[in-house]
Length: 344
Image (tube, rainbow, N blue to C red; front, top):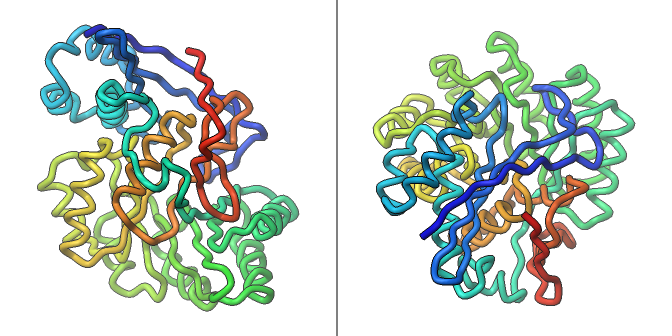
C-alpha cells in the first residue's frame, strides 16, 4: 500500500465572521491511499487557531503517517491520539479504499437519494443588516432550524435580531440556536442567558471560553437555556478525561466535530458517554471540503438521529469539489444524478 498527502486551500465566497475573527481561506489536507489499482481518500480538516493539532510540525506528522501506513489503521490511530484531524483523515481514507465507490462510505437510504438529513441554516456574524438578510434568506430556503453566531456585535443588537425572528416565527415554526464561541464573560453570562431564554431558543453553544470548568459547571447547573459544549471538547483525548469533563460540567448538550475530536472513533466515545448521562448531542462539520463533509454526513445518517445537524457548510467555498451533496429545503441531500469531480 502506498500513501501520500496533499495540501489544499479553500477560498470563502465571502469573508465569514466568527468571534475569533474573519475567515477568507481555510487550509485543509488530504491523505490518499493506493492499493491494487484502487484509491482511498480522507480529509484532515485542521482549523488553525482552534484544533489541538495546530502545531508547527503538522506536515511532518502527515509525512510520518504516510511513511508508516504499513502499520495499519488501529496502530496509527493509537500513535496519533494528539492529532485528531489526521486520525479522521486516516479512518476515512482506509474506509474509502475498501469500498467499490471511494465516496460511498456508509451505503444507506441517504446515499441512494431516498432520504435527507435535516440541518440548521448557519447565519454568520456581521452587521445587523447583513445578519438580518441572511436570516430572511435561510427562512426562504426552507430551513426550520437557524443557528446564529453571536458575540461579535453588541449583545443588545443581537437580542433585537432574535426578537425580530420570534415576532414573525413561533418556536413551532423555527428552531433557533445560537453559538457564542466563548464570547461571554463568566460574571455576566448568566444574565445574558436569562435574556436569551425569553426568546425560546433551543440552545446556546459555548457561552464562555473553554477551560473554565467550575464556571461552566455553575452555568450549566443554573441556566434557563440548554448549554451545548463545543470548543470545550477539543483536546480532551482520553476516555477517562472525557468522562470526567462530562461528569464535572454536566452540560445539557454536546456538539461533535469529527475533525476536532478524533474522527468517528473519538466522536462515538463522546456519544456513548453522553447517552449514559442523558446529554443530547449532534454533529457539526468544521469547514471541511465536500470530501470531509460527505464522510461526516454519511456517518451521521448511520447514527439514526432525528435532531438538526450542522452540516450545511459545503456551499461556502468558491473552489470546493463538485459532489452529489446539495442543500435543499433545509436538508442535506445526496443527489444520484450529480457526480464527483476531484482534482488533487
